[in-house]
Length: 295
Image (cartoon, rainbow, N blue to C red):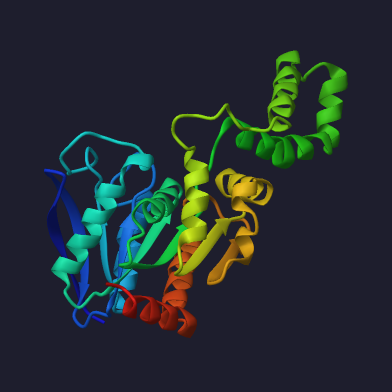
């Protein structure tokens, strides 16, 4: 399907944000807002968001990718993923305003963009959002990183003959052994700090996951510490109990794929998984059903 790309300027708390809208000639009533992850702008790593938007638009889905306040070409003070809910809400409003046919919104986010999507749902309970596509969600803490390193790096090193040969020959420095011991100590800690004034973002993400009533597509990279940390944390933490058994969850684990899906094969796989999920009958039915209950 033919589509156009155009600049979309919109307001967020008095600052002007800039986005790029991919608009199909005959748009679906489902639109996608791409939430940028990390300190980057709307193009994404390896122009991933550009290519994703074009692929989805060619299939009939309107897509908005935009810069948060303080990033790229948008005005305002720079902020991290825990403080972009207003930006996300403004992006949703802009997509619906530019493409009036769009009635239902999918939030698509990689890394802390996925985390921001869950935080947005928890904070706003926005009925316009009917689906989430989450890739390698960010839940990092010192304890989660240590557990992941001990399980997926140090344990493998201890099983390698080369490691023991270096150890016996004195080629493994004492600082390396000390670092391993420190990682083990941190990994077996509870990972919980004394009760803070603000609820940790990992807990708020879990609440967003559990309270969201729409469909979720979860894509996890097999060669990525961030994805492994998410699984380690979600499988062990009580706030995420039974997260894999939620209604409406579709999960894909991509073996050998890195964090940003950096090669053409991995990128195309993500595009196809997203498109197939959007076209799946159960997703279409639930989205339509949820939208009918929206005020």
